Image (cartoon, rainbow, N blue to C red; front, side, top):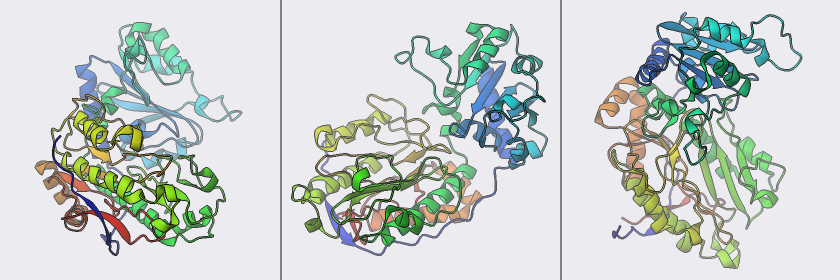
Length: 470
């Protein structure tokens, strides 16, 4: 990597108005059936007779992607086999919520109440035991059962990774009693692996939904930043965001004052004070909009040791991210992104410990192709979180955390036909990033967020943002 990065500068602008999409309808039965059919095709390739998909409130995304149903308060389990309508097991309170699933409404998803999923001391006398249910679904000595939780493992993480299963033990034990220990395996990778996972290649519907959630989250963060005033409490700033009630994929964070070093902290009554640091985020399904910087108007408000924050830290980060975007082409190996960040933003100065970006979906993090020596290529359909997190005891941090989708010509044409307004907003954001911020994007990159690339280093002067000299 010998190319010289473009130089950063500060510009004064009014943040652009790209508009926002209306909330898309829930996924259709056809959309969901296509996902189930694609999973069955993978089952056939792997010679599996059954796949069981576990979900709960925290680990919901795989089950929700397949069914349109997200467990609330309880657990749920989906059983998929060839040529039979899938069966979902739900607890007492989730049963009435199954109408959220168009698959269930259209008779393409059976259900059974399994009361052990219900909360403690609720009625439990009206459901069959798990062994009986599994057996009736055809699980026995000739079965090969794949389990989907929220993680798969490498041989480095576990000596028997294929059989290391992260769903509740009583379920796995029952499956192994029926099929045999060696015939029950972890196949979460079929949905989550960055190279071939089914959820790592988005359909036009998914792109349109994620553009909606990125827009909503970005507007909330923007309102918080522009509403920020000295003396306010952190709770009051969050109220400025006017969150709309859509489901969140992770907690809202707001770390400042005594909580500044607690990156996952939410509001706790801290006061907004000039000269302090701040990081904040809003994360609806398929989005996570995050910014980090200083509660300041100029560098004069910073500690003397951080007075060169822009030239030494935030500006260099912005320059490196310009190069990061230039790599975001179909076919680029993920290891190239890792090497770029290691070279441009050395760890001793920038402290970037996690992956320089990752895949995002209903859950905030699926997996990542961006790691050392990764040969996993960027693929069309990937929804990517621009999540490169620097940290410094001297300069704190900076952030350009938004969502983008990589879409080749064919997928762009499908999106333009399916959701023309969404496609049009993405094109406007591309023009803004190129013409105003100086961040050129490969033709396949579609920015989903209304804050795409906007980095205000000083939150009390939000119209002063970083750009690259053109």
